[in-house]
Length: 81
Image 1: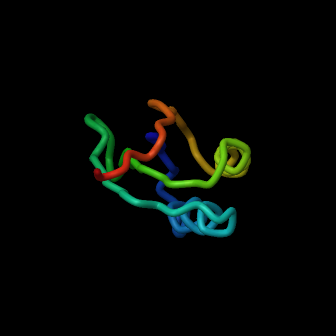
Image 2: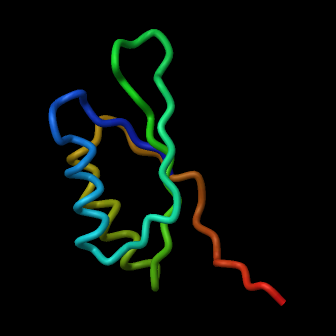
């Protein structure tokens, strides 16, 4: 998924705390500056969760904390054989 927060103190921490509180494992977090903005970043995250309802809950919980939120897809975790 990708999301933007405002540039206020603690805005990213609030999103990350909510993800952790909902029992989601954040397996990757990467930030990219948003072109033509001052100090605004887009955060791209990969998350691992037990079931889809857990994922849906965390998305609803973080929506009010973000300015933009996009889900690129939900994939089943692969296994090494």
